[in-house]
Length: 204
Length: 227
Image 1 (cartoon, chains in turn blue, green):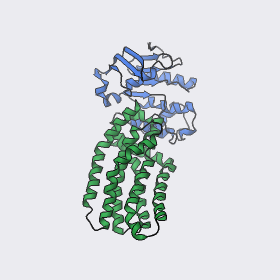
Image 2 (cartoon, helix red, strand yellow):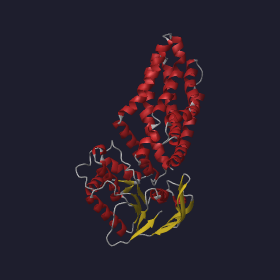
Image 3 (cartoon, rainbow over the protein chains, first blue to last red):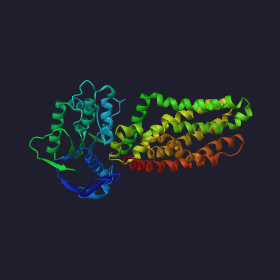
Image 4 (cartoon, rainbow over the protein chains, first blue to last red):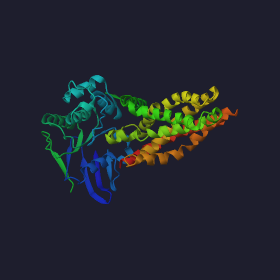
């Protein structure tokens, strides 16, 4: 499904990686590993099309993502370092708007159910500026519950989360893989999904 | 779960930006208060001679509207850029130009429309005639959206730059000169008994051109700024 061939990327004059090849099929999960500054985030951002690779191709369903654009984006969910959450809006408004931007009109019931599963019961209507860092991250991660995207690209999804939330994210990833989804992620915390082989890609 | 349409997305972005503007009212008020202040300073500075005030009124109002609309441009994309929402907008399955058009529309409703509504009251300070006030409003209604749209290109290009605010004004102000000339020209024309049709149709043509091209150009500028 997702094939990356001979990918090279640089920031400024510094080359981060070159000649990168991998492919990811439905039901597979891959962890991108490497020290700080080795280009993990740049790789994920290149896969999303924010950065242009110096050379190489990213192929989705047999076609280059450069030509697919919006068809590719419809099947992609990206969660970066930034939560994409507005302090002035409530958790509920934030979730409904971010789902709307990704092309899904979310009913209030569905949004509330998703937030409750993320452990935010009773905080749905509060402006997110009064929530803690971990709770805001949970609001951002609630998008995982209301998406039908096939490919999840998660950049450090576990930052600021407590043990319970980490387990919840592991469950969500397992459910997604069972539905023949695909996940590419980076993390510096241990993350394991029962019964699934974790592929790794090391950048150095 | 329902799939949203292109129009649904446009409405979503406009509604979102309007809600955010209502919850950060200070931003909206600065533009309007700046406009009122600048325009009110002229009669005080120039003196109360009515014939002179009447003559300079269209120019003063238009220049003040132009400068006031520059004030809020820096914030057009900045908050979304800083909190990561802009990344998510780029990954929207609908075209980014459509989202940009939504943001432009909301920006005009928040910073352009109040100026249009305030202009006739300020025009009275300059002893403008009723007919001239009418033409001023029509001109501003056609012109201020163009200012928001041209400004959005500049805002997208200077996104994330230090000192972007000044650079933004330097980039955008020269491009707004035609709007200023025809907008103020229309009011002067009606005051001296000439036809206003040519001025207003040119403004209308510029508005249509801007509607077609600026969202697309802004979307490209945003993608460049995100790299």
